[in-house]
Image (tube, rainbow, N blue to C red; front, side, top):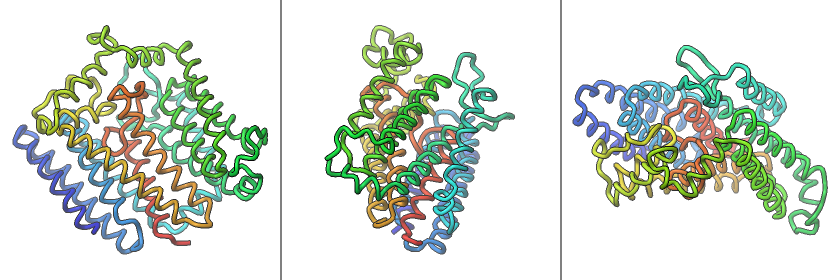
Amino acid sequence: MEQRLLWIAGAFIGVNFLALTLIRPAYGFTHSLSFGLWIACAVIGSRILDRRLPKRDMLLFPLVMFMSGWGLTIIDRLAPRFADRQTIWLGVSVGAMLLVAILPQTIHWLRSYRYVWFTIGMGLLFSTILLGSNPTGLSGTPQLWLGTAGVFFQPSEALKVILVAFLASYLAEQYPSLRTQGFASGNHLFSTSPRIYGPILMMWSLSIIVLIWQRDLGTAILFFMVFLILLYVATGYTFILLSGLLLIVIAGFTAYNLFGVVQLRVDIWLNPWPEADGRAFQLVQSLQAFAAGGIFGQGIGQGSPGYIPVVHSDFVFAAIAEEWGLLGSITVIVCIAIFITRGLRIAALQQGRPFRTLLAVGLTTLIGLQSLMIMGGVLRVLPLTGVTLPYLSYGGSSLLMSFIMVGLLLRLSAQEN
C-alpha cells in the first residue's frame, strides 16, 4: 500500500513540476533536480523502512512525502531562489527521519536523558537572545535564528520536540500517582497539588519568557497548549484545561497591552479592511486569494499569490487556495486530519506504556495545533501567529523537526520494545 500511495503522490508532484516547466522553461533543470531528489528520498526511504520497520504505520511516510513534495512545488513556483535550499533540507530531513526511526534506542534515549535534552534545548533558545539573527536582515524583526553564511537554524523548532519528550517522560513517571489520586474522576476539582499546578505554572512562565524576549506569541501559545493536552491525557482532569485556557487569555490580554506586534495582529484580525493597503495588506491579500481560487483554482502558475508578502512561508495555504482552489485547501486539511488520526491511533496502541502514549499524543498534537493556528490565521478565523504550515511552508528548521517527529511516530508504530 505504501508504494502505491507514493506512486500517486509522485504522479501529482511530477505533473505540477511539468506544468511549472512549461510555464517557465528556463527553470526546467532546477525542477528536474528537485523532483529527482524527491523521488530518491521516497524510494530510498520506503526501502529502508521496509527492511528495518516492516510493522510500521504504512500511511505516515507517504502522507508527509506528499505534503513535502507539494510544498516544494509551491516554493519553486513562488520563490524559486529558495527552492534549492528547501530541496537540500528535504534530503537532510528524510535522512534524519530514517536515522531516528531505525535506531533501536531512540525512544529510550529521549526518556532516560530528558534533563540533558531539556538543558540543551533551553540553552540554544536563550542563546538567540545574545547571538540570534534574522535571515531577512531587517532591523526590528525578532532574532529567532542561529547561524551564519546563509545557513540558519531556529532553536525553538527543536525545543518543541524536546519539550514533548521531556513532558511525556515527566508525566509518565508520575502517572501512577496522578491516576490514583482521583483526578480522572474529578473528585479533586480544586486540588492544589504541586504535582499538577507546579508544572503548569512552570510551562506558563516559560511561555511568557519566550513571548517577552523574542516576541514569538505563536510558539509560546503552542508550547503551553501542548503541555495542557498532555497533562489532561495523563490525569483526565478537565479543570486543568479550563484553568490553562484562562492563563492563555490572561497572557494574551497582557501581551496585547505591552507589545505593538501583538496589538497589530489582533487589530487587523478584528477589522482588516480600513487598512487594506497598509498594515493589513498581507491578510487582505490572503483573503482575496481564497476568493479568487474558487472551487477548482486558477491552476499552478496562473494565479497571483505573489502579491502576498512572504507567501512561501507564512501564507502557503493561501497560495494553495488560489491555484488549487477549494479542492486543494480541503486536500491539505484532510492530509493533516489523517496525520492526526494515525498519530492518535499509534498512541492508543501503546497500552501499558505511558511514556510512549504521551509522546505520540504530544507529537501529533504539535503538528495538529500548529496547522490549525496558521490555517486559522490565514483565513482570519484566528489572529496571525507566524508559525509555519508543517511540511508545506518554506523553512529548513521546521521541515527537519517535522520529519524527526514522523521518525519517532514510525518507531512507536512498530510496537517494538
